Image 1 (cartoon, rainbow, N blue to C red):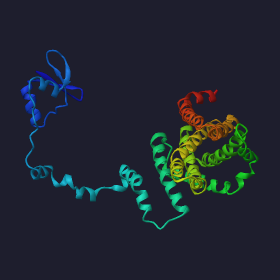
Image 2: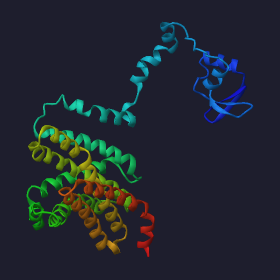
Image 3: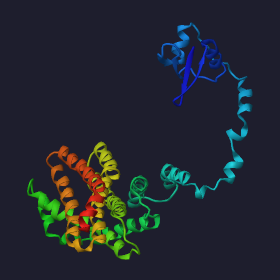
Image 4: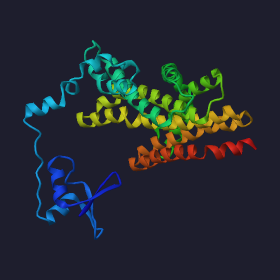
Length: 341
C-alpha cells in the first residue's frame, strides 16, 4: 500500500494494483511523489510499482480525431473569445506584443541611416523601462510622467551635447593617461552627464502637486538614465563602433543597447534617491543635491577611467553601483529618521 502525494497533500493509501490502473487511466502520473504506507519510505509512483513488477502504460483516449473532437474546437481556435477580448485593457497582452513585435513593425517603415539606430535604441529602452517599471514603481508612478521624463532627458541631452558640454574645462584631462584621466572622466564626463540626467528630476519635483517619495525619484532617475543611454548608444554606434572590425563592432553595439544604458540608469537612480530626500527635507537640500550629483559622477568617472587600465575593475565598479543603489533603498527608512532629527 502506498500514499500518493500531490501539492503537499497525501491521498490513500492505495494498493499498487489500483495505483497502476489509475496510471493507465491517466489519473496518476508515474512521477507523482509517493510514500510507502508501512515503512514511510518516499519515492515516486514508478519506484513502488516497479518493485511489484508493474509497468502500466497509459491508454489513449480514442484515435487522433476522437481526441481532437473531445478537446473541442472552441479551445483550439477560440475565435469568439478572441473577437470579444478587450485587448486595449489587457496589459499583459500589450506588453508582450510591444516587446515581441516592435522591431518587426519597424521593418515595414521606410526608415534608414541615423533613424534606424535611434529606433532600435528606443526599442531596448522600452524593454528596460518595462523592467524597471515592474521592479521599482511606486503608487506615485504613472506612464505619462515616465514618458515626459524620458523625452525631457532627451531634450536636455541634445541641447547640452550640441557643444555646451565642451565648456567644461575638465574634458581635456580625458585625453591624458591613467590616473590623471580620472579628473577628466569624473569632473568632465561624469559630472556633465549626470547633471543632464538630474535636470528632468529637478523639473519634476518643482512641478509636482504632492511630495514625491525618494523611491519614486529613484524610478524616474532610472528612466532618465535610460534616456541618456539611448543618445549615447546611437552616438557610439554611428561613430566609434564603425571603426572596429565586424565582430568587435557587433559586440560593442549590443553593449551600447543593453549594459551601458543599464549603468546610466543605475547612476540616474542614485541621483534620484538624493533628489527625493532633498525635496522632502529642504533643510539639507544643499548637501543632498551635492551628493545627488557627486556620487554618480564619481562612480561614472571611475568606471570610465579604469576601463582604459583593466575592464575587470570597471565591472567591479559597475557591480558596486548596483550594490550602492539597492543598499540606499534598503536604508531609506533609517535615512528618513536621521533627517527628521
